[in-house]
Length: 410
View: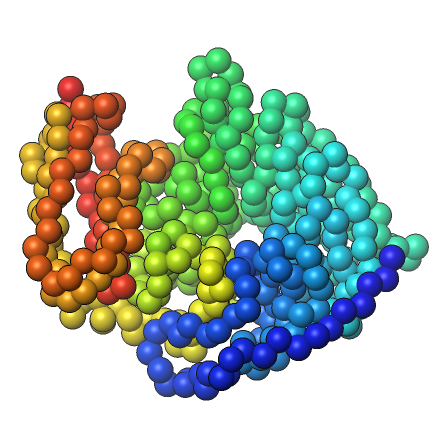
């Protein structure tokens, strides 16, 4: 089926993007956003519940090029790309017209990975398939995996080698065994993605939202924040990431990347995710997707019409954080029945305070985007119902981002 749609949606008073301006700049966008794909600093697509939008001037003007709700977008160049919304829409002319194809899924697919413009993978809840361009059109090749029989679902995948033989896919929580009834999906392939299996290792709870393949054996899974050095056979918790709950990450090479998440989280790494530095985003909205196009140009999208861009990587905002030092005092540590937190603000801020367990699960939000004027604040957290163990906290606002850890013992 061939669909055609193109209408202009100009931003009100289109902003002039200053290439010398520091940090992240918010550019007006006409709808909530789920995913983005830019092919150069000016040309890209953003999709969400209200359609797929195209810009050729870094977001100063938008054109609606496909109506309906979409969860993911991927473009190879200014002309060819794909949209995902249960069906898949394919264009060869920048979205002026679309062909549709339906994956052989019982449930709608939620994600896609393209190895090149001729070969990709589509995945979701309990299903995965390869899509290949042939002379007669697009063909679907099923990818088998016993993991799907117990509710496994894929959120992100990648390959350890340039030949795309050894693959790894991570995703949602599902039943693995009586001992691990809520373990994340972890599956491997050694035949180019035709068949997948779960390594014998089956520990842990939770789920993954994204994946970074570092080299031929190492990978990092986000949200649960686990690392592997043997292609996913075994995993260890990365405690340096305990304070970060990423929704997505984007790397323009194996070392340099950005991560995004709730309450306006943007963080940067230049060592393959070994360490991260918080970047002030200027928003408390949930950031759903982020793209680091090169060392300078990056984009991020999220709820409430959020569209951010930077032309210098946003890195200058690290200096802004140091202008307003924030000290958070907590006592007693270790805690038994309760723990108290104290901090002082030098200016009006909208504060969010999150508490996470050691495996990255959000357990409490004692302060949620509340406006607090300059001055001293304190609150207590009831820890009587928390299991003994280590916990981390994340304090975030327009100009502050602070993390720390504490212990609960009973």
